[in-house]
Length: 506
Image (cartoon, rainbow, N blue to C red):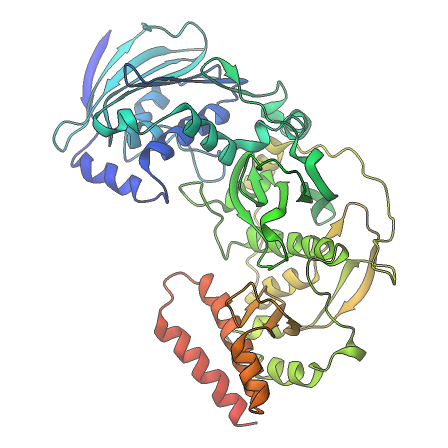
């Protein structure tokens, strides 16, 4: 049985709208989405084939395949068989993107109760497709096979080297020989393992952790439950690293972002890390390419992971350690600044006080040994099901900020010791002639760049106090605006005006 249909009206515009969601070319986004769909379908093997001569890319998996209803939704621009928080891709998104640059897209699928294939293309403003049921041209097992018939310049866009680079950049945890071994233990859908192949050869990379100095494992806990874990290290090999630097923040093996948690360490291009946090899938944007800033789960995770990263950086002398209160010559300035911030509702959260557990350091800066690492097993499917059933009461803004300041965050090899954390914004000086910024803020500390020409001139002209206040003000505002959707330059000027009006009135 076969039938023909089309995917709604003005599909060409809808296809363009989907493309605009991504920060990279649709040719890249298409491939990433198709691989993500395969992982969501619990595939154990994902095969990518590139045929330059015939202008074809074929992605085949051995996952669950799609049933009849899912296959209809696959072609529908107004429907999706997935909801936010249940997978790292959207069914059909890759094929829809491919309509931008392919002459046609053929999709074969075989599930436990249905099988069939479609041939789909753009024609004017429509996207007609034909579905043939109970027949498959080439797929001979449960799963899905997507064939991209490349058109125009796209025939020359791809190369094996580029495809390999994209897989490494976005799915490295499933390719690294060491990291990939941990996924069957922590995510149920991967209990049989996952292999990504390119032109018949498994994509496998030598464990990057074997090339790292100062290697340290870490974990993030929420309400005494381990929600994420990973490691940090400094790359020391003479070989070019296989992936971009930074800490990979991942869900289900897909790298969503790379981050330094708003820190500016020395030799940052040599710092690498990996954190797997399945529960953050609910905090991922629609295009699965970023985390939603302002999302409660993300903000709580960020603060705790930032604490772990900061301890590691300080221990290895990659950033300056904040001075003790008795040594802090900015104590009076900090007190005055935090008093101002408490009178600005938009910035008051940064002036909070709190008590939290923190990793204890010995006088020489070493981590005090705590419990040894235990085997961590996270059933991501169970986490998702529990998260959907939870119905937490709405918290006030102040409660949310207090949680960020007071909740638990611990290092794998450190001992938790309760201590009072000095509340509010702190100030730290650091000579960084490698940076053009006058200052930067990580959510807790404003670092003043004493190597900046503006700092030196302010010191020489006895205007250093004003310079410090200006740097703190602008850095905190910049941090706030980056997390505020739709912020404008007028918002920045208004906050700056309020800050200095309060300072001048003191």
